[in-house]
Amino acid sequence: MLITCNPCCKTPEPLRPSLLVLGGGLSGIAAAIRCARYFPDVLILEQHVRSGGLNSYYYRRGRLFETGLHAITNFAPPDDKKAPLNLLLRQLGMTRGALALRAQAGSEIRFSGGKTLAFTNNFTYLTENVAQVFPQSLAAFKQLAQWLRDFNPFAATPGVHFRSARAFLRQRLPDPLLTDMLLCPLSFYGSSVENDMDLSQFAIMFRAIFFEGLCRPAGTIKDVLDALLKRYQELAGAIRYRAKVTAIIHEGGQARAVRLEDGEEIDCRFLLSTIGHSETLALLGKETAEERPRLGFVENIVSLPKSSLPGDKSIVFFNTSAKFRYAVPDESVDFTSGVLCLPANFLDCHGEETATACLRTTHLANYEKWRQIATDRDRYQAEKQAVFVKSLAIARDVLGISCANAVYEDSFTPLTVAYFTGKRHGAIYGAPDKIKDGDLGFTNLFLAGTDQGFLGIIGSMLSGVSMVNRHILPKL
Amino acid sequence: MTTSDIKQVILDIIADIDDEADFSDLNADKPLRDQLDLDSMDFLDIVMELRKRYKLQIPEADYPRLATLNSCVDYLQPLLQNA
Image (tube, rainbow over all chains, first blue to last red; front, side):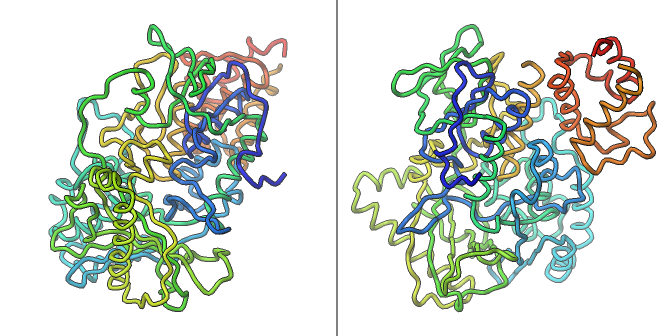
C-alpha cells in the first residue's frame, strides 16, 4: 500500500497501550516498531502534523523541503553484520532496500591556511590525505584509528562522566590542527558540548562518519519516514498527530497516564519519552537543574544553477578562523565555521530533473540573541535575510563558485527548530549531559533519543530500539 | 516436543533473525552468540519469539540458560512438553 502522507496511516488506537511513545521522530518510530513486533498495542503521540521530529519535511510552493537532513551517517556495507545500520534493520525486521540509501560522492574538511582533508566512505582515502597534509602525524593517526576500532564506547565507565576527546587527541596527535580538523565534522554532526566531545561519543561519531561513512536516501527523508511508518502499520501500531502532551501523570515512581492539551488522558503500561530530558522533566512537573549552554544552529537553503556547483562534493565542513571554535557565538551567528551540504551530490540519487540544485549552509547560532531579535518581527526577517546573504558569500568563497542566480528558498534559526520540534533552545543535539541508560528513576518511564546519547539518524533509531530492548520488552 | 523439535524451533527463529546464518558447523555445546555472530540485541529476539509463538514467559534471570543449543533444549523441554 502506498502511503502518500503521514496522517493517512491510521490504525485504531489501543485504549491502554502496552507502550506509549512520546514523539514521532526517528527514535520514537523505531522504538514503536521494535515493540510492536511483539506487542501491537503501541501508540505514538506526535505534537506536530507530521512525523520525523528534527528530520522531517514540509512543502513550499509545491516543492518538498527537508527540515534538517544533510546526510545519514553509519553507511556500513551489508556484510558487516554488527554495524549499527545492519543491526538496526534486523531489529526492525526491515531490509536495506526499504531505505534505498545512496553513498556520498566525497566530502572535505577545509581549514584556513589552505589545509584540506578529503574523505569518502573508504577510510583509506582519509588516511592518504592525512599522510599528505600531516605527514608528521600519520603514524599517530593510524594508531588512533586502530585504538578506535578496538575501543568499546558502550562499555560502562563507573564514576567517569566525561572524558575529553580533545585532550585525548592532543596527547596522541603531534599536530594540533589535525585534532581540530577531525573534531570539526564530528562536532557539527553530533556534539552537544562546546569545544569538545566525550571520548565515547567521539569514538561513535568517528566510526559513523569516517569508518562507515555518509549516505542519503535516494529521494528524500520522506521516503525513509514512509518506509518506517509502513512497517509500523504492518505491525498494527498506531500514531496520533497534533497530540501535544502537557503532563505525565505519575505517583510513587510510576507513570500512569499522559494528559493532552484538550484534557484527554491516555493510560499506559510503559511510557518512552523521546522529547528530551528536561522537556520530559517539565511534563513530570519536576525542576530542571542548571546546565551548560546548548548549541543551536542556523540553516539556509538556496537554489543554484547545477552548472555553478561542484559535482563531486557532498559535504564541506569548513573553518576560516585561526582557531576552530565550536561554541555558542557572542553574535547571532558564527560565520567563521560551518557546513555546506549539496544533497544532489550523492551517488545515483534521483533528484528532480531540474537545472538547479540545493545548497544548504549551516552555522552555529545563539538562541538567546535570536529570541531578542524576534521580539521585533521585521527585525527578525531582516536578520534572517542578512544571514542568508552573508552565508552565501562564505559558501561562494569556500567552494570557489559563482553565486549568480542564487535563489533564496528558506532559512531556519534556533527559534524555528524550537517551535516545530519542541527542542529546548532549538538545540538539535539536545542537552550537553546525556542519560546513557535512559533511566529517569521511574519503574515504567524511560528516555530515548537525542538526550539518551546516540546521535544521528541511525543512532537515534538504535537509541529507541535499545531502550525498548533493555527496559520494556523483557517486562511486558 | 522432542529434543530435535526444540532445536529446530531455535534454529528457525535464528534463521528468521538472520537469513544468512550458517548452521553447518554449529557446536551445540558452544554459545550460539559467538558462533552465529549474534548481537545481544539479536539474542532478545529469540526470547521474544518464544513468547510470541508458545506464550512462554522467560524471566530475564533465565536468559543465560538459552546460551547454547543444548542448554536451550534442557531449559525449554519441560516448558514445551505439551506444545
